[in-house]
Image (cartoon, rainbow, N blue to C red; front, side):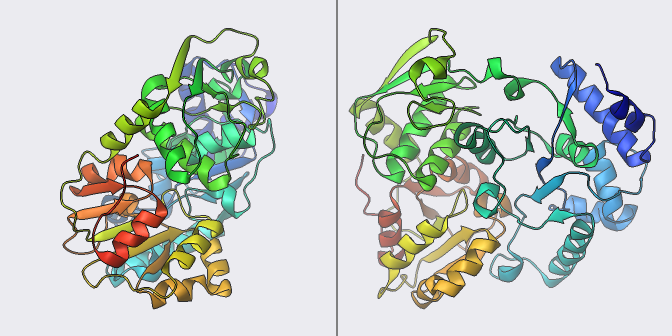
Length: 428
């Protein structure tokens, strides 16, 4: 791998042992991927906190957060002092909401440890955004900007909607990027890998957020890790929430990290631009039969109609989605045998608090929570057996993570389930 003079100096220890170890990790990582060089980045989405019981025990026994970062972010057997980050870095989700710890079954000792860890994180220059949707809270890279992001639903949004460039990175590679401002130049950093491979035409209107979730889930299964190009969207242009759910679904059922919507996303002003002048490898069609089959698949674990828990906010809810949920809940009450948890970034919750949406949700018996979700925290109300979700991503993961039944539908259907205690969703 070719290194610039500055990169070689970092590798040789000019900036200290932590940076040298970061450069060693990046070189090993890059060589394994076939990358010939590194590329500069000043935009990182990372997880560096001690989010699991094992990591917390490791921190206590090995020397605190420097030890955790050395072992789990730098692959270093030796504990080294971690300097402040060189790049703009925001933190992705945590294992729980510190403001709702008791509700999520987290004890005070764990909360205290978390607070110490966040102090360490902040002191190193990392932004405490604690969200899987960093683009909602001010991290908006420009088209063509090289990034190093974790979290599959964030990566696909970054590549596809923003037109920035990142691969789905792990804790180690983003940890190294934070300290060096470098990431291997491969995959979706290279323009030739960003062109469309599969043509998708539509035989049904894609209107609602749940429609976009169904389409994304179906496409992910069909194309796996390729780049789909969706043609024919001339009405019902999707908003942020719909693109967010579409991408999250496609990256859950498959490994999609980038897509194009012709006439909508920035690298697909035309079909020819989306395909880079090449012919698609395959032609796919999404019609009524495909939509029905996908709905049945996502609801495949649902058997009992009595709903114990409704979880909204995967990926984290936008302020528009919170506004919609508050409108649907106004004047109603969550059923006494059901719980409603809605997850959002802490910055957006602050706005919801000021707008009165949090008060409306809480007056109805729901809870607006931050920093995590039930998949990350593995937390649900005690006794939960049946969950209702408006996220295809969560319908994919939560039954396996928590051993629950899941119903997938629209936000309105989920709010109705929370208030009635019954699933009354209509098949697609």
